[in-house]
Image (cartoon, rainbow, N blue to C red):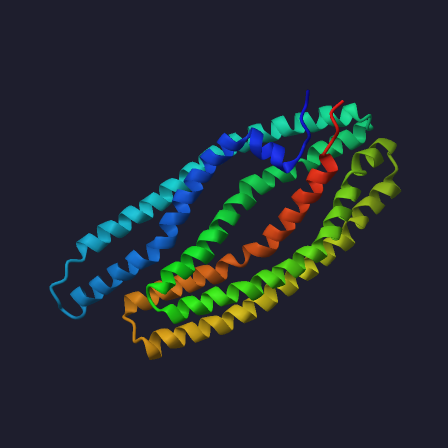
Length: 292
């Protein structure tokens, strides 16, 4: 008996494979989030040795930084290696299950093929979006924790800015839900139109895809602009605290700026993540079949 095609069911069936890939993703992320601290220490040691003419041992911080950097490279390399094999096999299994369930429901061949193609969005989520979710967590949570060890005020600024960012992206998600459903509705008609060989309808099909995609892009751009302006203000405040208030060394300023910049850059993933989540949610509802 074929089980329902839901997101939860997929996670349960492929949990070991997905976890195996995520282990290396986490190794990559952990190494990357702590790397600025050790590179900042290396930078201070080099400055003291070469410019201040102090007898400073810079070999130890150099070797530590190289080690952390190579751990990051190892995690990234292995996660990309295994994801190609794991997710290609996953799509083959999911597409097969979608076709079997759709045939049991008596759908036309055109709709069955369209749904099998739509199921590829599950793979996009697991292969691309899931590592981004992991990185988002490390870039925000890990960044705030790291900043706390430099100055609690900087950490507090970064922490409180998370809430308006979440609010803005939640507004974006709510507006994209219906638009994503419209795109899926339209895509399911493609194979039927090809079978009918009506070029006028095929032409209309592709033009029907434009309005919802354009509206999604509009909300994406608004979300991007508002968040970037907000974070620019935060970035300026943090730099003032670093330079004027705390009088940090060059290495510490580098580390703080790197963490803040990582925090800012990570927000670029949020609109895509929200769009992908709404797409997968609609897809799970659409492909959830009753076993017969």
